[in-house]
Image (cartoon, rainbow, N blue to C red):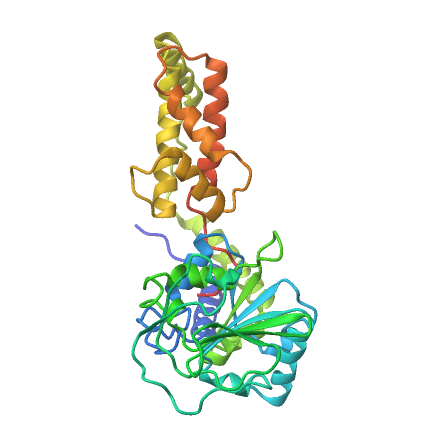
Length: 396
């Protein structure tokens, strides 16, 4: 016959349940709006053809320090020599205070990549043609040699506008005459790079011809060994800080957390007294270390040190090919060079390590000491390619 609930326990249960309902209601009301995936603008949240989610995720996978910027330009530091702000076809215009903040940001050493025809609303001394050109896809070649054009002899753009009159500090990088589509100029200690359209960073356009190389050149920091901190603007796409993020800066979050802990304690104490009783599970006689010792003994007696090297070598090679998007038959030297250039593993001898491991995996007799050293190095690199939890700084 089931036991009845004591009046004191019933009261605690009702209080805990009420607090839980209040917390759920608050989370629903204060949660930020959902992602605008159907936006026609090049937003990092959009998976449409005009969106820029692919470019944003690519930078993250290539270990570029990139984040979505949903704050006002007034939050930018005036002396930011290592920051690149991407303004991809902003939908909204800045206020006078925000426009001044952008000017101070560039004057102090910040860099800006701006795409689209509305640059005149953000920066002074610009001249963009008021008549929109033919919106078709067009291919342009560099007008002068530059680091932006390295590996990008052609760039395909849907131009939203052409540049007009140039001043003494502005330089055309792609296009010529009345069809200049890529222009750059220095402002104080910083620099502004303008694209006539967002095609090279859009989901549909990043794979066109050499657009990917052009995009990566545009966000690379050629004057320093350290990459830019890339702030990809979503503020002017309408993604503003939500009410929940505002409360996150106050003590309300901690108050809700404390109420949650109290409710959990009440429910736990009730369940401990009212739940079924289970016997504790006995300790197993099989130890994981016994399995490891047994397996190691088998390898030692068989003299199969080269097999252990082969397993680690093939696993690292498979992960590198998948991460870099290269053919499965890519030589080790080429694979190691690509890893050093694209994953930021500079001067680590990846190619030599892969070639040495491949040679040792074919040897009939390999010393355990040399095999252990190779396996450790290969596993250390493999761990750096293993999937990790998303960064807490990114908001999705």
